[in-house]
Image (cartoon, rainbow, N blue to C red; front, side):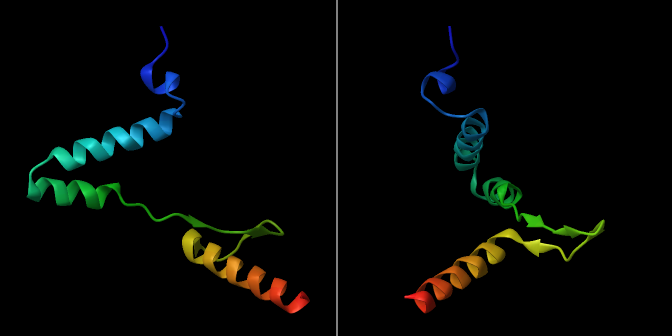
Length: 78
């Protein structure tokens, strides 16, 4: 028999995220707030060039900047 999360089409990582959210929401106010803060992440990345690591950047802000740059390039070419 397959696992329920697999049968429903979820990935294991997505299943864990949903389960963690359910557990956090079931806690009392104090522990719930602490658990919610632990659940937040900030992803960072760095480009490597010539064997050297570049500046660490926040993934979300880099995505926003790239989307704005692409939108500007698209509107300029029209």
